[in-house]
Image (tube, rainbow, N blue to C red; front, top):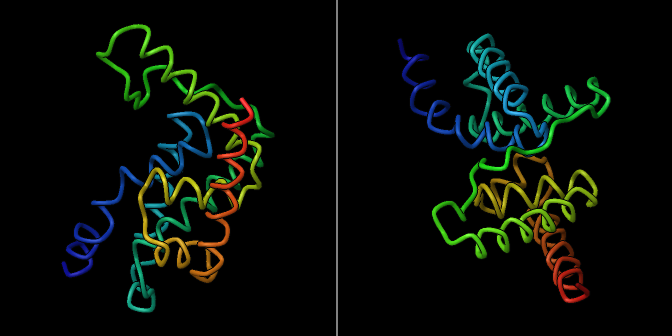
Length: 165
């Protein structure tokens, strides 16, 4: 019963974030759902080891990232496009504004795809999932300073990119 409570308290609240992370890597809703389901199943199977896991949330993020990357490698990059209406902030706005926002999102997504995988993950965890430097460092098993340096470099490149267009 204690393990069920811990699962409900620490893991279930982050399922949506795990899905978004998996989706950002897989680019396919069904594959992302499969990744999250597999991660949850694996975490539950390892319930005897939970006491040795310092940060369960970070462990789940790391597991999700690793599993998504593994599955992606196995699929040989045969990915579908992101659905047009997925989490689109422009819904309900006028058509012109929607087109502008869609173009900006597409430019940003294409730009992020060209970053090294580690920088893509750091960018998504910070800017999309709004995780702290410390949480990102734990998830990726790097120092907070490395997270900050990477984000600084990413933001500088992004600024240069948007200034150039």
